[in-house]
Length: 299
Picture 1 (tube, rainbow, N blue to C red):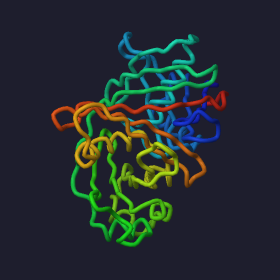
Picture 2 (cartoon, one colour; picture 1 turned 60 degrees about the vertical axis):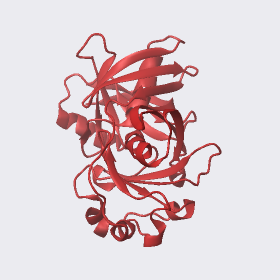
Picture 3 (spheres, helix red, strand yellow; picture 1 turned 90 degrees about the vertical axis):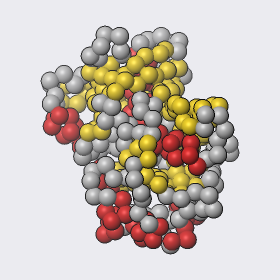
């Protein structure tokens, strides 16, 4: 049968930038294998399937697939789907609702921006946690095609964190080093792991956009994502890292992150940290999205 879908560019307010997302709005009757096949067909970093919510008080249940596997949580699918559902409500006002993800309930706030776009902010459904030691700097550098001296800085070291999706967080000396990052397939597994969710998130304090705090890149080749233009779940994991290493005082802090510039898909992510008693109390991810295409897929 023909099923309606919409694609959006996420973490941008301009078409043909940001991170592309496909959202299938009529998935009834599809099993997991069929949804995975459709995600492979779209071949974007993620494809979302929107189902009726299990709890009538929530807006919808969504399932998220990369080209090779299902994810419990991801950021740009959550932002893009929230913006789209807000648009489908047909009202020009801001809306609050809850989405059901495999990781749990996610509270979203949406604000429209014209007929084809808007902005969404969602609260992290799970606080990030450190998940073990990273590989040593020499191993990380080799897997990224770099010299050991490109890794780390005076006050930041690699670490592994997750807020529902695991990442190796790798600080870089600056933009020159981060631009030279390349996946070395022969050494990737030793540095970052061999499972489908192994991912590297590189960052530096030198940026291309005035007012932004970090420039980032993300590689996840085993997920079928050689490089991602914008990664909200990595920013969510980064929130935990920054709460420990970022020297943020108690209160609310907006941390703006740029990504995707090396791919020609500039993306802008707003990460908000709420620090209390020296610890991360809550965090949110926000950004814009714009509708690009609408159509049907036979499945």
